[in-house]
Length: 275
Image (cartoon, rainbow, N blue to C red; front, side):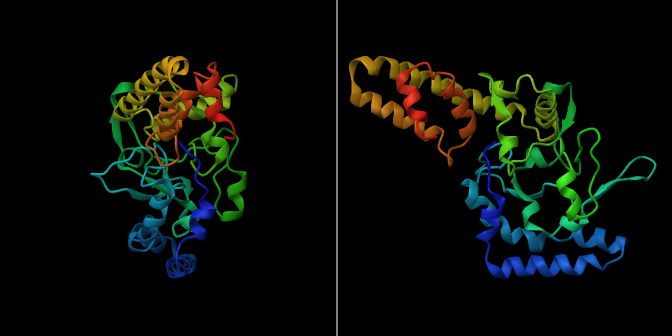
């Protein structure tokens, strides 16, 4: 999960698109609850116009998984769900209707993190975000924008730099809590639950990240050899390593995590100088 500066993204959205969303946001506020639900449910024609800007911010990669799916359409996903969610007794759990047309609440997602999909790694449990938005204990769901700063979400947010630092990846591609936060129970809980809530730990993503790990190991082995024999060839290896962890590369944060495991080599440490 790579950090995305959502303020910077929104700043680049054409004025006419922001004006369209602003008008929709203003109009929904005075509606009765029943019409708020309908208006938010049917707003895709308005927020879909911002998708090109969300895609440009990540080179079309899903903001949650960093996967790139040429054969699939990305979705403009609401980080705080726009739908009204109640418990089995009809008691309101959360309802972020006031963020339905707020572009700061939008994230770019591929289908697997956003929809409901069975994850075989979790004994058939269904993963995917949908309308779920759990908070940590002793945190209450906001009912207006002013209350958002008091929330403590469980789900990791790619637009929160601190959240993106909590993730690391094992050699088999599975997301784990970063060693820097290994003793932090809250960090571990958030990563563990986000693995299913966002399907970060979905088998197809794991396979792709494991492939990245194997590529890194191969390049490290070549670099160790060329570090002794051929400085020009080592330059090529370093270039390849920089490339797979560049911001535009697929699963680039996983690649960076894997490469950092080999920082005992001075030529690897040099790659991170200035990062």
